[in-house]
Figure: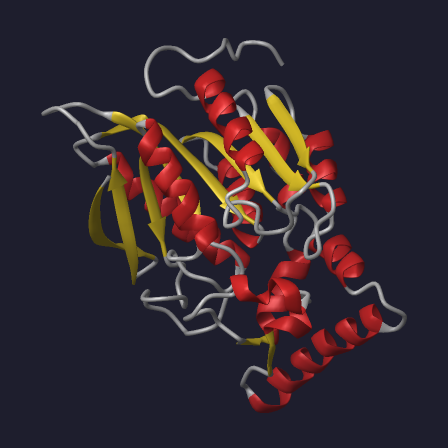
Amino acid sequence: MIEERVTFISDGLKLSAVIGLPEGLKAGEKRPAMIVLHGFGSTKDAGNVVTPCTMLNALGYATLRFDFRGCGDSEGEHSRLICLEQVSDTRHALSLLESHAHIDAKRIGVMGSSFGAAVAVYAAGIDKRFACCISASGWGNGAKKFEAQHSAPGAFDKFMAMLAEGRAHREQTGTSLMVSRYDIVPIPPSLRGHVITKSIMTMPVETAQSMYDFMAENVVSQISPRPSLFLHSAVDSVTPTQQTIDMFTRARAPAELHLFSGTDHFMFAEKNKRVHEVVTTWLNTFFPVHGEPLSLDHH
């Protein structure tokens, strides 16, 4: 794998990125590419990003991983994560790849995990330049997701009160109320080792409100006739599995759903062999490095 550290501009902000190219490229040769999105308040160096990029490069694909605005080494108000702004970042990342000498501009897909999966689905739904979409441990309805994540008695009422307090705080002070990432998205202590260095630990309430309002499921059907793949752990300790099932039921062919036992929310970072095999087979069928994909004419 050959890595190129680059930057690109998204809505006036300079974002930090890494382009990965497979070994053995010939002069003038172009390959399909995948943009791999990081999760909630994370960075492009998370295991859920680096591991699939390494896998994709070994299979012959080019990749792009980048820090969303306000995350990692990118510009932007630190810790302010707004879903639709991340969608915009993803579309600008696509524009960067379209002009790369070794990338087939017509064959650029997008994939992500968790928060990044929701952004990937939304971006692919509204921007037909994306050739395919892979969602891992994702979600499509922010309100239902939060209700399930805060399921203990009184927990969801507490979460909604936090949103209301945040709105009142901004009206009164003109500033954001800052809260812990775990008050927004609870993660069991056993999985917190996946929250890597440089991850954002304190965020404005506006981030939670943005996620609550985000409805990737409303645009998922628009990905068709481009192919989509939905992955989730059968038992997910962070994002409810039902979120991905519901997105799949709204998707149109060609779409596939796979639920995995023996893994949890960070399925790519866990380097699960079966996940790797399913993704590889799906890519060979619907988004091959060389040759034509399976016919996508059926709906």
